Every structure is written in structure tokens, then in C-alpha cells.
Amino acid sequence: MAKIKGAIEVDVEKCKGCGVCIPACPTDVILLAKNVNGKGYHYAYMENPEACIGCVNCAIVCPDGVISVYKVKVA
Amino acid sequence: MDIKDIIKPENLVYKRTELMTDKALSYCPGCGHGTAHNITMEVIEEMGIWEDTIGVAPVGCSVLAYEFMNIDMTQAAHGRAPAVATGIKRVWPDKFVFTYQGDGDLAAIGGNETIHACNRGENIVIIFINNGIYGMTGGQMAPTTLPGMKSSTSPYGRDISTMGHPLKMTELVAQLPGTYFVTRQAVHTPNAVRKAKKAIRKAFEIQKEKKGLAFIEIVSNCNSGWKMEPVDSNNWMVDNMFPYFPLGDIKVNGELVK
Image (cartoon, rainbow over all chains, first blue to last red; front, side, top):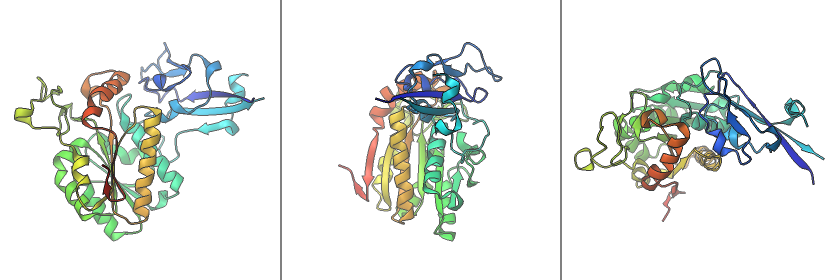
């Protein structure tokens, strides 16, 4: 069975660190960073990138639309 | 597999729609307005109608919606968005016209315009963001504030004996013969966002077929006004707002849903 691998790319400077994406993720990939961006927000990042399945859930609940999602099938 | 091998343009499955401008949204972190903007613009992009769509921004937090939605927009006086949309639609009956309003704008000062636009059955789409509070001006009590809910003008909680009951605007307009599709949605979880997007799509399809007015309420959070963390405010909304403002279709194809 083909395995699906996903990854997200966060526009760090536009992320407001609201954390709405964290409960939306079914595989607990996302956390807020300890570092802050230029506006002082703790931006979202992939803490556990291996688990990402590219389901797009985080991106569609993101109020600021800062998440882009990529997905590949691995044989 | 390395992340760099996954993040390539050919593997892209989702990104912010081109119909949203590159400006950072002026909303507070976690505000449902951004999600509602995104799904509205995605629907317009998917239907390919961005050159024929005119939006009307309200007064309130989303007063600057025209800065973020990359389509033709205008901005109406407080509460008058349905009246302005009526004018635009009557001059250009083939354009797609929608208003995007908050609860202070639509239910309070614009209650009259809204009810009459719905009663006339104008072929417009009204998107109503209900967060139970006046967000922009500092969290004052709105007509939709829940009983007992604290706001800056009801610091001991809304007392229904003196301040009245929360106004269920969506149920109210569903009673009017002019409305064709009336629904209440939310944007706090991925599933809710997908359902809300389908509802908005349906609303624009109804406008295309000139069947009547489509009214979509989106129950949303106001974490700054409610003085909560974004995720907590979403949970509070599920526990407190949804029992009073239940999600689901209220009127479909001109018939009330029993």
C-alpha cells in the first residue's frame, strides 16, 4: 500500500500563534515554537514532521491562511 | 523522506487562495473572521466568478474586508450593507452580490435593513458572523449576547429582565417568504469549515439561479472580547453558544426544515 507523507509550510511572519491548528491536527504534528516572530507571536511549526499525513485540516482552520500543505505518495 | 523533498511546488495540495490579498489580516489571533474570509473567497475562486462578484463590507471588525478580499468591494454605512447590496444588484442583476456583516452591524443597527431585504427576497447572499459581542469597539453587549454573559456594558452578566433576550436573527429571517436558503454554520473545526464552505457555495449557486435571498450565519468566537485564549474561546463557544444558536439548515429550497 502506498504510504502518504505530508508536510506543512508556515508563513512564520504572518502566523499569529493562535494555536487553532493544534487540536485540528489528527496526528499531533503541530506545536507553537518557543521562539517568536517579528510581531512577538509564538508561530506554529512541525514538532513531529514524520507523522504528517497532509490532510489539510490545519490549513483550512487557520484564520490567517498562513499554512501551505504538501503531500506525496511514497511507494 | 526529507521534508525538503516533500515541500516542492508539484506536491502542493493547499495554499491560501489568490483572492485573498497578501496583507496580514487585522483580526485578533484565532478570530473566525479570517477563516470565514478564506472560505468565501475559495468559493468565489472555485466558481470562477471573481470578475462578476461585488462584496459589501460592513462597519465593525470586518470594516476592512475590502483590504483583504481581492475582488470588487464597497463599504456601507453602519448596518446598511443589505440596502447597498440591493442597489448594486438591481443595477447589475447579473453580478454576484454579497454582504459580509457582524452581529452588531446586522442584528442591531441594521436589523431593519436586513429584515426588509430578506422580506423583499433580493437575490443577494448575506454572510452574518455572530460572535455575541461588539468586538471592534471593546466588547460591549450586542443583541446576540447570551443571558448571563459578561461584556463591558453588562459587567454582571446580561440580565434578560432588563436587557432583553438574545436575538435569533437567523430564525427570524427564515420566517420571511423572501428567503430561500437560511442556515447556521461555524468555522471552529475542519469539519465545520468544510460544511460552512458548502453552505456558502450553495448560497452563491442560488444567487446564480435567481431564486431568492441566501442567509448564512456563522457562529464565531471573539477571544479578545470574551477575554479567553483562542482555543478556549472555541470550546466555550461549543458549550455555550451552540445550545442557544444550534447549527444546521433552518430553511432549504424555500421550506422551513422541521
